[in-house]
Image (cartoon, rainbow, N blue to C red; front, side, top):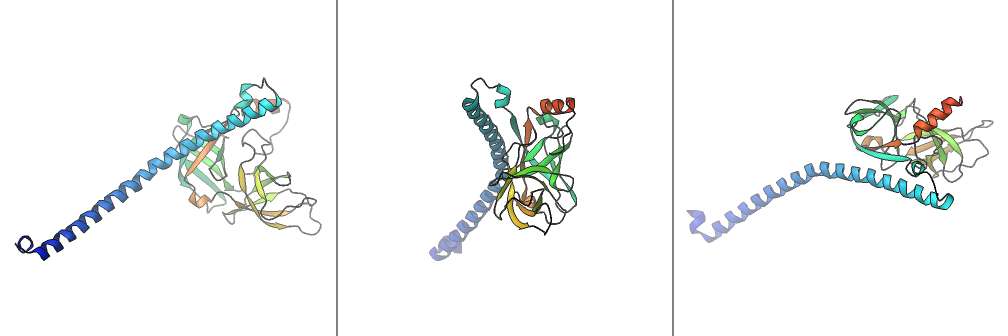
Length: 255
């Protein structure tokens, strides 16, 4: 009765009600937006994988036009990309692994390279129907052939088990002049990783007296504590390359 028959109390009551209703509607909207982000992220990850595949085909196509007009279509389609979500990820062990939500059902096989929108992630170790386990770059058993982009010198990256933000670039000879800030990318010296995938930036360079190689510290492009989505790289020529190397007695020493 007070609210109905008094203008001031009525206005105060309805203003308060409107604020409460607006607050509830805002909360509901924000919650719906939060949960819809998961679907949006999945869609963006899938789109990113598709765009990367198209870019790979475009680059190979342009290369074939410049070098050889009747280039084999297989060469023009060396890599395909499959998007997956990270469901488990370890960074605190000496030998870390990552689990993703795609497996044989998506065409993933053991030995495939794994990257992210930021850079190198690892390589597929084992596969089930709907899941895959990846050997992370943060694993002392994982080594990737890499190159200093500015100088063109090839080495190998590996993790020493200490800081998940950094890996070491090994086997860069002392006559080279690496600098802090230099980009380190995959070399492409195998059929697993495409060349030019970012590993990280050199953060520290040391050379001991008489040592044949530098001690180089590289800050990883991918923050593994924030890894949510990855792309599995399907190399369409790996089996051919592997069979040829086995037939000729060449051992695969770098991945």
